[in-house]
Image 1 (cartoon, protein in one colour):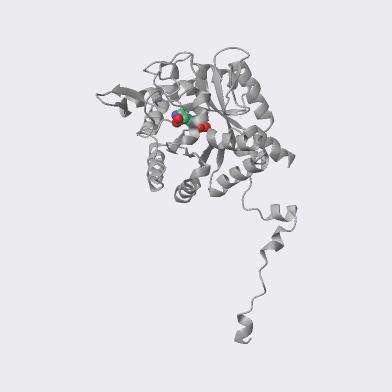
Image 2 (cartoon, rainbow, N blue to C red):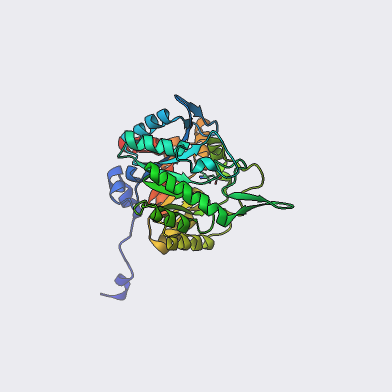
Length: 335
Ligand code: PBG
C-alpha cells in the first residue's frame, strides 16, 4: 500500500443512518420509557374537589376521591409512580399537619395503597406547605431578619417521613434542603422498622424562579424572604457534587437534580461521577413554559415536551418527574 491510499479513507456520511424512522430508531442512543415516569399530584381535603391551578393547565388540586381517580388513570396509561404533595387545611409554626397521623398526605397514601396497590406512591417530605410562614424549616425571628433553623427542623422532617412510611408510602422524597436531613430520616425510618423504605433525596435542589407555578399549586410561597439560605445558588455546579456525595453517604438511595432543563450539566456531572440512580424533576415552570407557548401556537406541545425530556435523559437522568407524565405515556404508546 502506498502512503497516499492510507490517507484516503472512504467518506463517512452520517446521513446514511438517518434515512428512515426505523433506521433512526435502531441507532438511537437514548429513549424515553414509560417505566421511568413519575407524576406529581396535589391533594387537599374534601370530596369531588378538582381545583385548577391557573398557571399549570390541566393540573388540579384534588380531593382524595379525585386523586384516586387521576392516579388510576395514570397507572392505566402505564405511569408506575406518583409523587404526592399535600395542601393542609391548617398551617402553623411547627408544621403539625406534616406529621399528623391523619394528615392529608397520610390519609391519601392509605387510600391510594388500598385502591391501587401496584402504583408506587412517593411522598414529598417538606415543611413549607404546612408552615404558616411558608419556609421549609423552623423560623427564628432575629432583630433584622429571620433565620431558618437547621437542626431543630430535622426532627420534624424525620417525623414526617416516618408518618408517611407508616401510612404505606413506598418511598420518601425530602425536598427541604436542610443539612443532614437524609441521615436524620434514615435513622428515624430504621428506628421505626422501615428499613426497606428508600429515600429519594432532592440532593441538588436550586433556588429557582421555575418553581413559581408550583407555589400556586401547593400554596407554599414563603410569606417573607426567599429560599436562598437553604436551596442552592444557580451559579454552582461543583457544589452539587458535594451535596450529592453527602446525601449518598447519609443513605440516599436515589438522588435528584432539580430543576432539570436549565441544569443538564449538573445531571451529567452527577451521573458521571456517582453512577447512582439519578432523578430529574422537570419542574412546574418548565411545564408551564411549554404549555403557554403551545397555547399560543408558538410551540408544538408534544414535540417540545418529548424533546425536553429526552434531553434530560441524554444528560443522564433515569427517573423523570414530570407533570406531563400521562400525556407522555400516551404519546409513547401511540408511537
Ligand atoms: C417544596 C417543593 C418545591 C417544589 C417541590 N417541592 C417548591 C419550592 O422549593 O419552593 C417545586 C416543584 C415544582 O416547581 O414543580 N419544598
